[in-house]
Image (cartoon, rainbow, N blue to C red; front, side, top):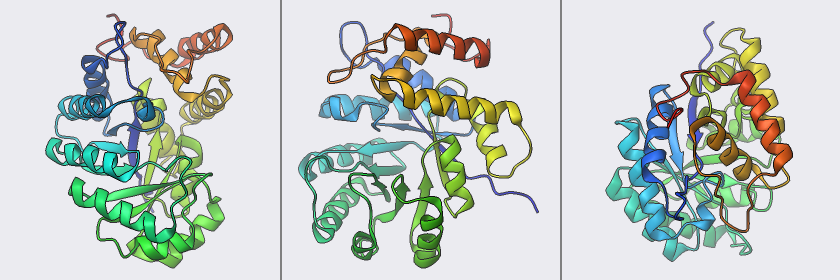
Length: 296
């Protein structure tokens, strides 16, 4: 029996120019490289520091991703309180964003009824379906799902809170009404075995082909021990940077594509130890023809 390879979504960091603005040209080029591998580019996630971008910058990121993707569906994270989220979602609708991921609220803890109304207003503005992020500090419990399935624009859950076995039970319970996404090449592929139809990747920012190979192997599409080893090591390194995963990923982009090292406070760029670790990883795993910007 041939394995079904999940849809793969690659969440991209946000490049900043030395002057501080969003570097749309570099973001567009990265989206093109990711899309060329059959991965759906995604902007405005946690890796993309959506919380540090204003409305205009969020729109610039979506514009750049859509332009670079060349017709491949693009995903956009939608953050903030409802008024701001609706404004970003309205831009997403005009720009042709395919799917919205509603980022979890911070500090506020809306009730299931209130959160369902938030999702309804965002999806109405976006004109497309939305996946909600089930995070450790704001998990999508059954009480939330009971409300969310009544929202026409609600499509599914990006799961990072419940374990694989529990998610498998929830997938069986909610059937075809709820689509499930798994987070990360390794853990996300385990969720795919439990019923998730989509797996997210950050490794695709360095090697889109390697990310596809790893997820394909991890979801039963054949043996590829090198790609799996790369994905496992990547996952460990991503979590080990004391300055955070976005800082780590930005350092990877600096060394592989010449991006500025800038991240925005409250983040700081990766320290010297992580810079050395990144150099070692790239030396082992980066393809010489990684992308059009490698020699810029």
